[in-house]
Amino acid sequence: MVERDPDLGRSYIVASREATISGGLKLMARPNVAKMFVAYLVTYTGTAMAPIAMAFGVLDLTGSTADASIVIAAPTLASIVVLLIGGAVADRTSRHKVIYIADSLSMVAQLCLAWLFLSGHATIPLLTLFMLLNGISIAFHMPALMGFIVQLVSPDELQYTNAILGTARNGAIAGGAALGGILVATVGAGYTLLIDALTFGVSAILIFTVKPAPQTATPTASMLADLKLGWHEFTSHTWLWVIVLQFSLIVAATEAVFGLIGPAIAKNTMRGAQDWGYIASGFGVGTLVGGLVAMRLRPRFPMRLATLLVFTFSAVSIALYLSAPLYLIVCSAIFSGLAGQIFAVLWHTTLQLKVPTQMLSRVSAYDHLGSVVLAPLGIVIGGICYELYGAQTTLTVAIATVIVPTICTLCVRDVRMMTNESDQ
Image 1 (cartoon, rainbow, N blue to C red):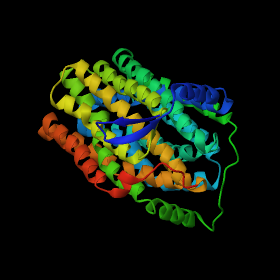
Image 2: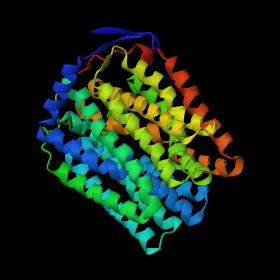
Image 3: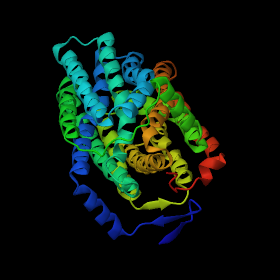
């Protein structure tokens, strides 16, 4: 059925509700998808708690947003350094092994962070060290996961699968963020991080038992040759590198707000971790709904819709800037999360359809690297700016950093006109 959205001025195809439900149930009946669903549910519950624990743990330790920015930026900085290696290793070896080994490494890092807080030995250098270890794990996990999903389902099932796994992730984020805020407020950062470590262990075990299809690989002379081929594929898609360039700025702004500035405002003007947990949970609820909506969307121009949705990423910053009541900030987080998850499903599905399977992890590594390359700088600048100039000025910069690049991206014809037909 073709419907017209007067607000977006475009046509899109909406799958029937019956097809959506039956397609989702059929996929969930498969052991591989079911195990990945549970792994997502478990690990992202812990992952949603961890940023709240780290932000408030460091703020309680030193009281400085500048200090907190160093610790919070550390994993992103580490992932930037080794992301390309992670993508190449995943394509050359086994994405399956890379993922469960990376989860095991994250478990070790989180256990060490928990011990530092619980034992009273936490210092900025030690916390930064183990956050760097977390970043290395992320650098191997993220690009491997993009290609791994393709080994579990057929191409026509990718959007359903991305939406289903996104639903698990986002439901976990919604509950985990609220739980994290309550736990940090009641038992502290240390025990919250301990629970996060255990979730990584459970995820590693579940993913270990998944049985994917054989991995497609194209042997080359060296890892450097692999990276060159990946770069050529990445730069051959204008829509891809333009949106990644856009997100290098947007991720820097949103990471600064959600990772540091928002918690600092909550600590200074609200009820601290508890209120920020509700806000982060609202974002998770929005992404949960967004995953369900994304299962039904079949846009003719997926990147046009996806880019229009990016404007909503500034919603929480705008609500904080206006000193809105807590319920309105939560509502803005729900709205932003809903749009963000639709973007994510459209982006992942388009990437998996347009990029050759044997190069997915490398291209995904370039995607992730480009998207997060400015995030550590954004977090550090955000922390310093907050201390020097206050919340209003810092939030103004964050809002502009989302809106301006998105307008520029919409001016690119390949972004607006690219269709969702498979190139494979």
